[in-house]
Amino acid sequence: MNQPDIGEKAISKAAQIGIENQLDEVEDLNVDVRANPLDLVGGKLESVTVDGKGIVMNKELRAERLILQTDEIAINSVKAALGNIELTQDTNAEAKIVLLEEDLQRAFNSEYIKSKLQNQKLDLNGETVTVNASNVKFTLPGDHKIGLEADIEIAELQTTKHIALSAKPILDAGGNKIAIADVEDHNQENAAFAEALLDSTKELLDLRNFQLDTMSLKLDKLDVCQGKIIMAASAVLKEFPDS
Image 1 (cartoon, rainbow, N blue to C red):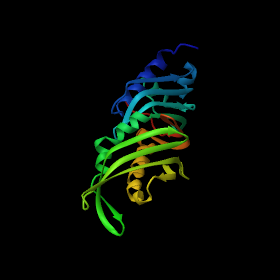
Image 2 (cartoon, one colour; image 1 turned 45 degrees about the vertical axis):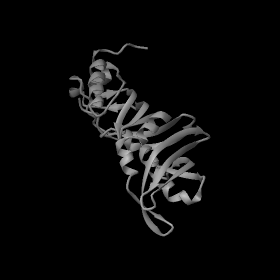
Image 3 (cartoon, rainbow, N blue to C red; image 1 turned 135 degrees about the vertical axis):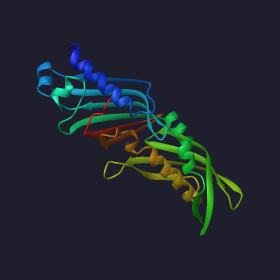
Image 4 (tube, one colour; image 1 turned 60 degrees about the vertical axis):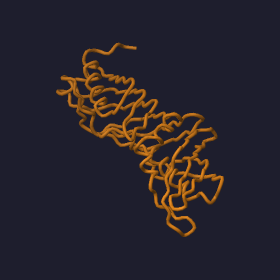
């Protein structure tokens, strides 16, 4: 493989700094810009590859891996000479996101999600009650399923119920969000409580948690495996993050 030249290195570094500025946390981030020197003068990059590990972007949700691979990029060649990527047209890319069971479990215990599961008003046998969820356990047992367990406190009745369910996350029609199918509730009376947990699951798996400000993502494939979830998406970059 050819070694990157000075121009590639400068643009790669500037792009890496710009992306890091949009992340809450990152354990390791590499940005690899590939360009023929003559094409670079003419305002063209062959590709940009972003490979990040241990990324936190939104809602305290950590992604084990995020890989973004662009198509050919049209850029402002004058600014490129200064190490700055300014797109002159939208760029297509492919993205891969890997989420681990333990990171999703941790996200369910984040302040953001815990607040969503407190003081919820639900209909229980025709009566409106206030419920609080605690001790949420999220698992990825395999067979394309997720597992959820939680203790549900019903304030008005001063009682606590334990619920356990499994379900299959699937792509929705538009490819922007996750839908939930084949819910298996061990107790049908817990349906209202289960819905609140599943809504939080769909929110955590929303692709918008993983897109940069200048990017849009459309989910193409969802693999729910034992211990991890792998999402493949099509991306459109309107701008490259500024450094």
